[in-house]
Length: 235
Length: 100
Image 1 (tube, rainbow over the protein chains, first blue to last red):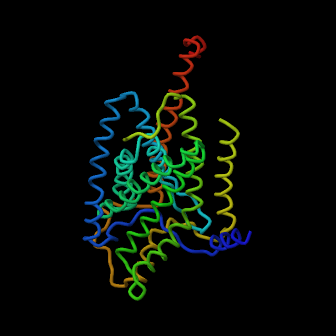
Image 2: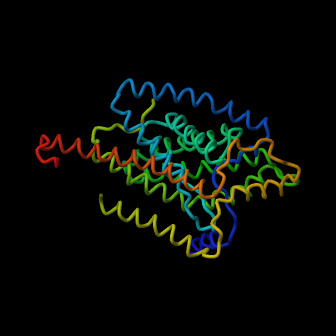
Image 3: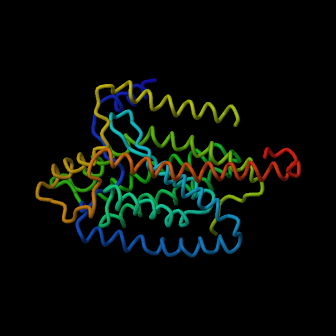
């Protein structure tokens, strides 16, 4: 009970939030380049993964479009959070569970590029960093959490936790990236990390729960019509 | 749709409503600009070295583009579920009961 009170207090104390992506020009050139270089191998691997998926089963083209559309819709929805600011879910957990993580690197990068070019949301210089958090770390966390918890045999739990943690860790990564670029002058990087985390992660918790629920509902609906669909994707 | 799913959807709605009620005075801004504030607290000398190539000229245009993004996605999602449902119907009764 006391824990709940503390939790509630954290939420009620007004703080400000970010929308999720790192804004254009807000990472120093060296950092921006570093995250680009780190992201490229995942992206390239993802392109091959998608090609293999479509080669093995061309019928999955539509399902691939579906998981891209799911990420598209969810990342367009800015949802109010208990902290008094808005953020949006990522929607990449679903695709990571069905097809595997790097497939979502490619699809997530497309969503991020769209938002950077047309909505001034995120940015071209920070695209590498944003791809790394939302389209690499997020899907990887979702994928492995799903695999891990499927060992318990409870699919609903596994899918919920996969989407929830994938969403949350996207923001943890963003906080880390910002902390790395802007370490606190007197207390160092981890102090900055805690500061950014306090803003990002707390705002994101309720949204991550919502993403978890939506992912369970949508995946169950897909499986209802596709009994033979094998989850887990890439080897 | 099972009962479990309906509970989940309702719970999602409740989470959003609670947020709006608890902080009814808050701005609920997306607040990208606020990030600037934290960063300038940490490093007052930093200024962004690149700015967006194009920005939506107004909040209205921005929400237009966001709703377009959501609508396109929803279109594909709806199409896919319709397709799955139709396919199953054809399989189940060889298409006899399809409404034309």
